[in-house]
Length: 255
Image 1 (cartoon, rainbow, N blue to C red):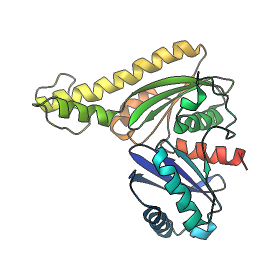
Image 2 (spheres, rainbow, N blue to C red):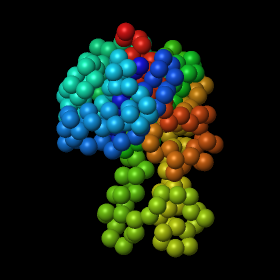
Image 3 (tube, helix red, strand yellow):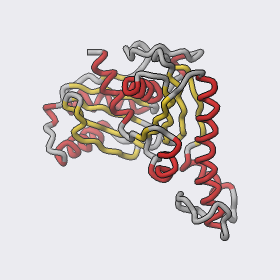
């Protein structure tokens, strides 16, 4: 069985595959000062809950945008799983040419998402990943990573508004009854919700023009849920497990 880990700035997502079948997956808060033993015990407990034997894990691949955790996770894998993990980093075989000016600047999760999306559609595709930041990544019909855009994520946009505007309340991120808010809470929710949907729509429209060929669209990430109903009208597909699938594909290409 294969353990895949997507280590993001806010959340760490783990999944266990048996061949191409995702048996179980979990979303945890990324804690930068968690120790090797804490990660090891946590992983084993998750396996136990899902009735997965830790000794049945014979492969591990990690995509991380939090470099300080890489050494901790590598040691955890060695001590608790008796494995040497494969990291998505320069030199790994992804099967995807990177056309960024400096390929090493592209986050591992963005490449992984691109690989999974292209494998699914076999055509030009734009991936939107709703996480701490919201990333837009364009893949050509030849399977080339073209580049993308990075915007502040929905949650940190809301938090920045609350922290920097003394009289504005912290609100739940949800669609308000009307675009024109009749109270402060609904006004803030309208700006966040409808403003973010418009941001996604606008960037997608401009990226499609620059890609220069028909492009499918797919959304993923931990912050899909607040916007899900609107995103279903904007994007062809929503897949919260896209990054996990990309990790599985890349692992198979490096066996």
